[in-house]
Structure formats: structure tokens, C-alpha cells
Length: 242
Image (cartoon, rainbow, N blue to C red):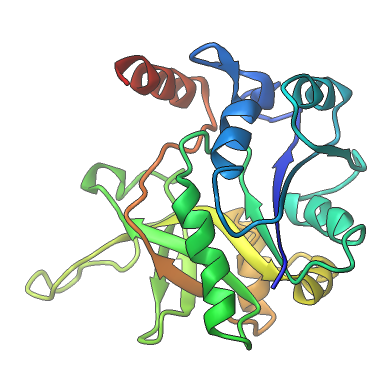
């Protein structure tokens, strides 16, 4: 099985403009993510997909592989699909978000291994136990699954709602890393946006609303996805402590 790891890196982030090039302990964020991803064992190649010449130049400067994609893609999935079209011999594509500089290489391998273990699997992602202080944080996405580990729903609201306090109550945070079979990804990217996706602002709901299944694998990684200046400051503080 051939695995490709793709890191979408859009320059014009709404809340943190120029986000891929934001500095983290002396290195651009995109370099931090890339250096983590290339340590994974199962991907044969790691590539940054960007719409920005500035980002491409930085990636090439640190020796990374980069592909310039269309600036007109409405989502990271569309950018991922463009890259997939150039890799006909790839079986599985893993989408590592360009704002997860602390992503452990082993979780990338864990996702890839799920496709080795299940030949019928088309899409997978990760979850981890959520800290209570994030229960009502809309930037911390929650996920609930069925008894076989497939997603029932993702939301920015608290899931599940603890109406009965005596019942064992766990809240899982969605980790925004995805893996797809290549052919499924190309079909998925062609779906039109769906109502729940647009209400929540969560693209993965498009798959659920079209009747597709998403395997959600539990892990212990609980990093900081960087969406705001406050997130960036928090990650820089962690790197300084390390």
C-alpha cells in the first residue's frame, strides 16, 4: 500500500494572515509541521500543497517538497484532490493540517495502518479525550461515535449533552487530521456543500450528510491547532519550555 502525506497550507488565513509562515521557536510553522510529518514511517512522500509563492519558496528553502495549487479552491479537501490527481499510483492520502506543528509522527502511521487492517475503509480521522475547559469552546470540535468507532456527528457545541449526571460522561475532541483512499477522496471532493457543514463550518459533515462513514480512531495526542494569535503565543511558550 502506497501512502502520501499532504500538508495543505493556505496563506490567506482569515484569523491569522500568513499563518504558514508564522514563526515558532525560530522556524516557520509550515517547516515545523513538515519536519514532524517526514518522521512518520508509512508515507512514501510528504508534500506541501499551497496557493502561495511565498510559502512555496520557504518550503523549497528548507528542502521540502511543494506543489503549487489553484488559489480558487474553497476548501483544503479540494486542494488535496488536486494533488491526488497527480499521484495515480497512491492508495491512501493523509491530510495533515498545516497548523498542527506538534503532530506526532506515530499518529500519522496509526491512521495509515487502519487502511492496511481494513480494505473497505475509505475515510478516517482521530479523536482524543477533551479537557473540560474546552467543553464550551467552539474552536475545539467535538465528535461522537457509534459502538464500532464510526462518527455519528461532529459539532462545535458540547457533545454529548450531560442531561443525566449519573451516566459516565466523556467528551472527545476531534483531531483535524484525515486519511482517505485516493478514489474516495476524488469523489468526496466533488460533493456540493451541505446544510450542516455550512451551519457548523465543519467540512467533514459533508461526508456524513452524503451517507459516507468516517472511522474515528482514539489517540492520546492533544495538540494546539493554531487559528489565532493567542494559539500561536501558546505554542511558542510550549516550545520555549521544551
